[in-house]
Length: 501
Ligand SMILES: *Cc1c(COP(=O)(O)O)cnc(C)c1O
Image (cartoon, rainbow, N blue to C red; front, top):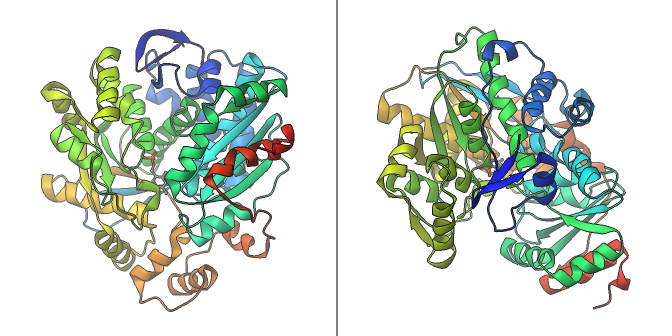
């Protein structure tokens, strides 16, 4: 299997190269040259780890079987996920045919663990091939979930060092606590005085500075990236859609081969794109229900064929979906425009320069055949958390609530309430406890642990031990810097040049 770029169809790279490199030189995203077809019956009865290894073997053809198995067993061990990594929970009731795919049983209680527990191991193997003896320095700017998941994934992975910057006032108290108490010998966490954009800009500036690259090289180090456009983050997400489908078969909810829908709370378009790739490999998915919060740039795109990022930005109760540029959409459009990399180059340039692009009737029609787009604002999110609790006795987080509400809209608009639908449940309700508890009853004044204890008492659901344990852990990282000081922080952390600048 070779890989090409959405902006250069002639490229042919190995899996290890695209994982190590992250993004293609001309700015495009790496995609496999084709999606291998699978025979459902051959995969149907595997454990999660065996299924994952079987799928990875089709894509990571320059890895040995031993390397793939080692990556999988490090990533998805029962002590990290408390059993099989994902669970499928079927809701009864009249509101459609809903099956929640819980993807948040990993160390950080959000679905990003599914990819970030294994990416560091993919990366370590890839670097050994392309840059042996080098230490990879992973720089991350985070608005919350990614930073913690990257820290947990990379902690104590040999030949790596991970440095996370987060906006001082842009993450939830629980997310801040998760990062500030991080353990591991190769991790650093620093708050930036500013918003997420300030953190992101600082990181980008360091990444693209040739002088710094050179300086790192002299010390046997190189930058690498763990952000969500890396193919090594997308690939692991394909696995759980197959697994969920086979769980439906095992439970007798579908016959092997019978179609389902998939509904996903969407931000950067990575999770839902993985479901689309699963479909191209043979998973019988009829419709993709793409759920947005008040930042409904994707809803509008699916309905009109025009992607327009010039709009008001809303900070919502589902912050991990607060995004106006959904990077991974580029990969879908590449597939739906018959892999026309010239076309993609033009659209992405228009997006950068004018702030919008129009894919035209032909591609828009293809998008609409496969995707239903809908959005749900904070009031709708809160109402959904409450309704799902009251009617179904199931507690969901704010992101998952957005998907449940948009699925409800889909059923109302189409009348299709019988097709079994896999709904991605992307975070533990305890991770966004203030908004979840606030949806169930008026909030008293308190800190996040008071809210968690109250939510536990009210719903008799268990607080995740991963979050509970943080209360006792010492805060290791307290530093707050100006965004202009990020470079000095990185050099100092790595022990290069004294960090004076
Ligand atoms: C990142 C995230 C999302 C959005 O996923 P994308 O792959 O970016 O579309 C949804 N929910 C939660 C909890 C997340 O952390």
